[in-house]
Length: 251
Image (cartoon, rainbow, N blue to C red; front, side, top):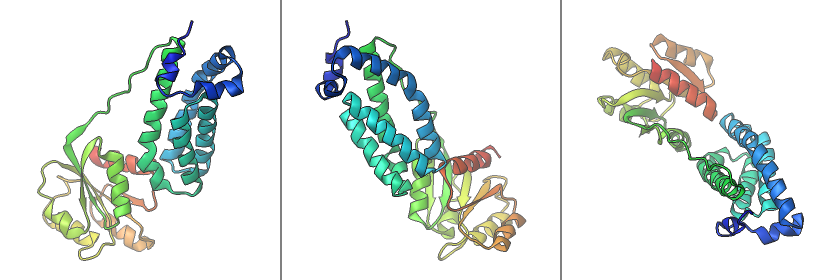
């Protein structure tokens, strides 16, 4: 016989759920179905977050919220609801800033359910950390810098520079394995950095990719006069920036 205290002691509002399901037998059967189907939903939530598809993301976190409310997962329901509202408002940076919180609570609930149903508890995979490697992000936009830092600070040191001069002053950092460089910045722009690196033969040491909101194609084409790796136009999503960082570092 299943021990309902496993649920109750971990904050699951079983009494509220029984108002819907009627009895524990029906609750348990439906909980089994939920557990069998949840992985696909979570994978799709992650996918839509990575490509910044807020419309489909909102639909899926709404569904997660509904599931959580049915089963008495009150905290998960609240977090999912917040994500639903913010994604509908297209507040993508809220989603990125609070996504780990949503996934951590989801993982916690799923392991409680697995324990209750007598199934194997799944340990969270460890992230491979390369704190001896640094990514230099050169951009005067705090929004962009914060976004990139949020994505990569569990894997790399992320060094932020607000203009070209700050970037140049950090180029002697031996741990830098790649640079993401904006073009249009105050004081010293990205082309000054590119020219400095070219004159000092630094491209072989530090591979560079351009991240830019410049709409003029001729200006962007000019960057390829230098041995850069790639150009990524703003606004970009998580999947795009991860591909560029991986490509840059591999080079």
